Length: 586
Ligand SMILES: Cc1cc2nc3c(=O)[nH]c(=O)nc-3n(C[C@H](O)[C@H](O)[C@H](O)COP(=O)(O)OP(=O)(O)OC[C@H]3O[C@@H](n4cnc5c(N)ncnc54)[C@H](O)[C@@H]3O)c2cc1C
Image 1 (cartoon, rainbow, N blue to C red):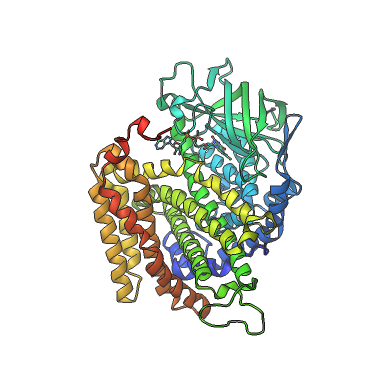
Image 2 (cartoon, rainbow, N blue to C red; image 1 turned 45 degrees about the horizontal axis):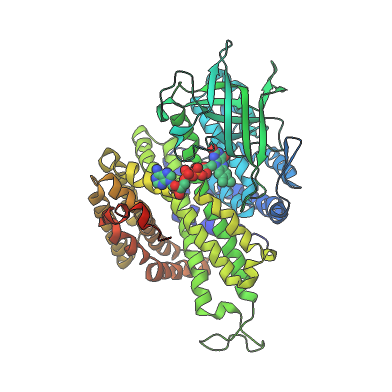
């Protein structure tokens, strides 16, 4: 597989020209930040992703993780790369300055996250969850816990994990049964089994901070009886350093389809000492601080693998000589033409390119809204919160589903060579598959979008999102493109409003269709905007590439929205009327 190369020209186009990040920072009074600084951060991040993390990806997949005497051993080079990562301050990008974080705007960090995902998804996962854990501890933990744990999580001296899942409690956390018994000193004894815990153990750091959902003795049944606890692998002494092993252990590590270099652990808590984070019985809300961030970050995993697959497929299509192109001989000096000359191969490559760059635009627009939520006026913050809430399930669900299509196309373009391990294309498919499942399956993302985000508060989140796109459409200079974008938006808005008040089972039956419909429309609007904006670019190939990819998206991919749009009015009767014994005829 060709060496991963960070898409820096696209970051420059999107941040400097399309989002006009300089004006954005100025409007939000983000001191000392401008495109030049962000560009320098991206340059350095690109070097780290390309030279340190990407070269470990293939071997990490081959070696996987091992459990040796109860401790996880990660593949060669993983720990060294992590030490370099934290020494250079990458882990602290988003942390609060009060705890030695760098407090960067989200828009400066998201390109780094994308590049790390492209370079090595398994390696990135543990750092991603630590960043999300920092958010939950920052927002909900007591001052004492923050003083003890936050600076070390932000620097990366210690990592963080998220412990929700139990064997009988996956999507439905109301079923979880891990117990938390109060101790005399104000702490709690945590007892129970968690499964599928990413980074449950590793050989990178001297401590691991587990955020664990459990039930207090007097807890009401269901999700209203769940509390959140901070449970360190090593209990710390008076100086704040790891001293004594807590009563927890790794039962096993899962053998799985992909992300083999990420340790997915069965965790046993046997009266482990933990401390309450947030109010009793309010743990799920606290955990959602972590999960919402992680959901967007998982969307970025999809984007990362799309980019890596597209790069590999494009390089291969330029070199692989097979057949003659139907439009005429392309390489007369060779016995055959590069497969890049084949219209069908071009269609696959353009599909990869259209989704990858479209999703990148969406991810940076989301990041811009995260900046507004952080630095804006009260009203701006409230508005950005609504947009973020609406877009989160779309970013997670669509960007990871589409990554399966894009990475599969990567295999297809390589032919049989894509199916064998040598080229790395099959690893991308295996690695990206999990992103459709964890942090809430994509079915749950769709249900969240239609059942909560759309319908709650009479469509306020939808309206805030529509207003954002309406304002962006004004930037489209060609009237034909502008009218197309307006018509897409108006139609989507009307169809969305028509769903308000729908029966829960009908909404659940079309949830995934609504998520796809929304995403295809959003990408259509973003592509029209990008193609217009690119015309001003000096980089002519990039400008023409954007216009032609926009045309390709509008002509050949946007039509998919109609398949999903047409079923929005279908009741769930056809799904629910199938009797149990009518599913099979055995
Ligand atoms: C590699 C890996 C890493 C993971 N990392 C972590 C981690 O770090 N921490 C952690 O806590 N968990 C982690 N998980 C667990 C992951 O989040 C769960 O697997 C996921 O939430 C789904 O739960 P489940 O597997 O029990 O599936 P189930 O909940 O049994 O779902 C099965 C199917 O039913 C559907 N379904 C269930 N309920 C509904 C509903 N209400 N509406 C519509 N459809 C529904 C689902 O969409 C899915 O298609 C990880 C899993 C894996 C495989």
